[in-house]
Length: 90
Image (cartoon, rainbow, N blue to C red):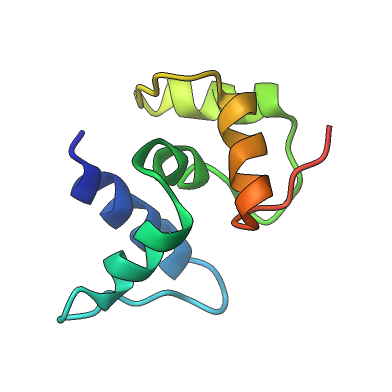
């Protein structure tokens, strides 16, 4: 999956949440996501919902969606938490 497709997938997922994250005709929605997420992080985050889930559950969702990431999902989640992009607890 291309980097742009990873960010677009995350944008579509965020837009299903109550606050939403609509697509921008100028591409500013993707530029903002690129500041907070790397492409692998965007793929993993696209499988999150509003509830806390264990890293194993998230890894299962990523695998079930057929998404390929180069690092272990718990490592990606910890990295996203350090950036302040997601909340993470072990």
